[in-house]
Image 1: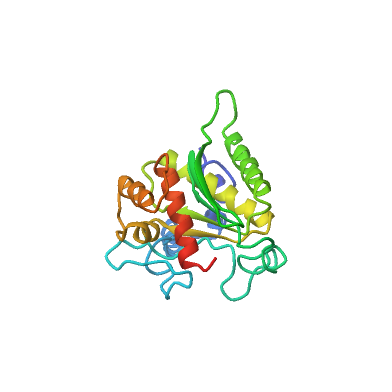
Image 2: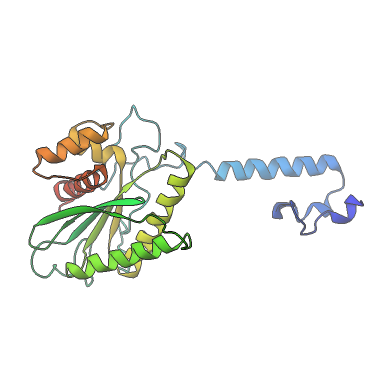
Length: 258
């Protein structure tokens, strides 16, 4: 095989960054070029490092613990409302879609613990709180994307049932037990944030440690401790997903002035 004739062509296993290797005069230059590209890419791919995580005081009231690894309790990346200039896709923060006061009383807030079994808690405009969990397990003979379509339809039904949602808060998970769980969570989060953008609803991710700290006083509280904390507040969660959603909702109400 004439390897020289393949250099610079779009063939299998040849990354695009080598499209100009035909201009190089020797293998030594090729190696140097590759090392430079790798170094540049490595510098840009340090996601989750201390170099590019938010380090200023958190404007949204999230606790950041010095004894935790970077990324676990850092301020959320996922905030659907600019801190200085609100997006033109939404109205005023936590108000109606036109930026005016919410009709009928308090803002309607939806809190979600995203996953195949999604916990949810909703405060209505009259101040009442209801909660439960909803299963989005893939069904037999349906494609992998169908559960996300069911999830979006369910969100719309929730929105219609309470005469609109004024803000969405969800648990932002940065560590997962396995690849499948990570993929599922990413899918639900992507569809949730896109749905919020479409409906002009402000949204915010809340780090796990922040939720646990507010609910129990411990940033590493167990599932049983979270359930117990919600029961002490007068709720009866059916599982840990529902208790987490309730904890997110209480955090939003008590720290975000909504």
